Image 1 (tube, rainbow, N blue to C red):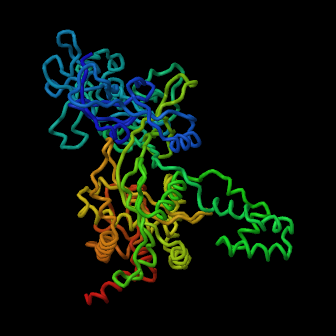
Image 2 (cartoon, rainbow, N blue to C red; image 1 turned 180 degrees about the vertical axis):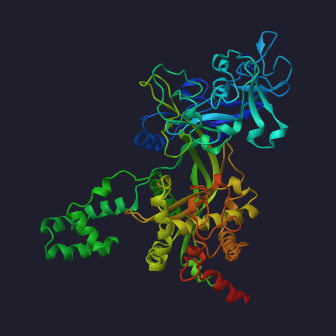
Image 3 (cartoon, rainbow, N blue to C red; image 1 turned 90 degrees about the vertical axis):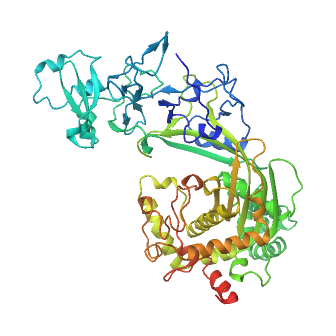
Length: 608
């Protein structure tokens, strides 16, 4: 068969054209098979033990191998290492003679994408997707065209064998909708409009069943899926819902709670607290230890009583280790180390130049001069987020390690750490918790939103600040907003609470990026940009509707946030532009914002 050579960026093999996705290339509609079809010799392995450990713990495939798609420089040739893509859908029609078929024409013994009449073959716009099993297949157009209402057609239609006389025609007398597009049989003269595909039960009524396989798989006898098929457009976004996982390649650091627990255990008086077993002497000695180490007496007593299970527990999330690593870098000042994780840390100045409402909450900033990120594709779903999960490796040999499509990215960024005491004090306010509770209830009542982070007040506020800063950084850094990404560290339900933001950009080559973002992390620049971002968000072009709203965005999972003020490219956001609210940042109504007094102090100082 004649090969089609086409280049993709390495990152596109993860998203949006990863395993199971449909991609249009040079007039062809193709689909990417699973990694069991990859040539492992040409796909280099990527090292990131933190990511492999998470995939091993949370995936049905167990421990696997991270592999990057084969890459090349210069012009591609036939012997160049490549990935295979399958033609899908197989049914196509000729744009000249309108003939509908599954086969292409031949030219000097080679299969080509042209009809016998010389016209180009165009893929059909509709395919069939399984509503629960995440399968996808061609609509059997010949079978479909001869089903349905038989009014005005003789009984000979059921015995029609004119397989090569099917055409895809358009009737100008039927307007511009789907009713004007018809499948016409030249043998029995039967026709059927595409408008009869509408409705979730249309294919089921016609007796068309799911084959229980992906297009590149051979249907197994007796393995017919029991779920219904739905006719959808080939380019519908619901046809491919990918699940990714990414991790920063950092030296794994122990959380501070574990370090404090070790210091308590190693204290010379700790055995006396254990021996007294909760008596009055234990409380007195626990107070001495607490004052010396910088913890609470309750922490010492809890550890002495054996309540230290959390100290030896594994990290709850990939971000826990990253947070601990960032804290260590921030304490070190200028970073002279080598490697793939270089961060210069500095304290936010508390002089009178900057508003105290900002410097009392933002305590330190890290200029991330170099960072390595590894992204992996776990698998995908189709039709809905509740459908069955399809892993990225469907190979028949379960004894071998599965392969996860991955890509390594090198880049730079800015890390912001917020004061935990001020954050805890603010989010304990009843008005703040009530405002965040709106999104918490909607997340819990949604069938799919439970996959998103819990929208506690600190997460919503820091997430919104990250979006506002991305919009402002796009003007000053030289990167488009779609090139910038966020990573939110906001959790209060664990021993080591987190309150920080990482905004970074990464590129899939050895050199990474060029420093246009990290230079903006210098003290004077980042604080000025943050104030400008807050000023931009103070007035939205959709106000007062936006600021007074509590039901915006997909599934109403945004409050006071819209495209005019806080939304960015969905590829930049961890939650696809959901869980945002300007009121929890700048205040509004009776809700005090995390940074609501910052702009007032700036205006009083400048007289504006």
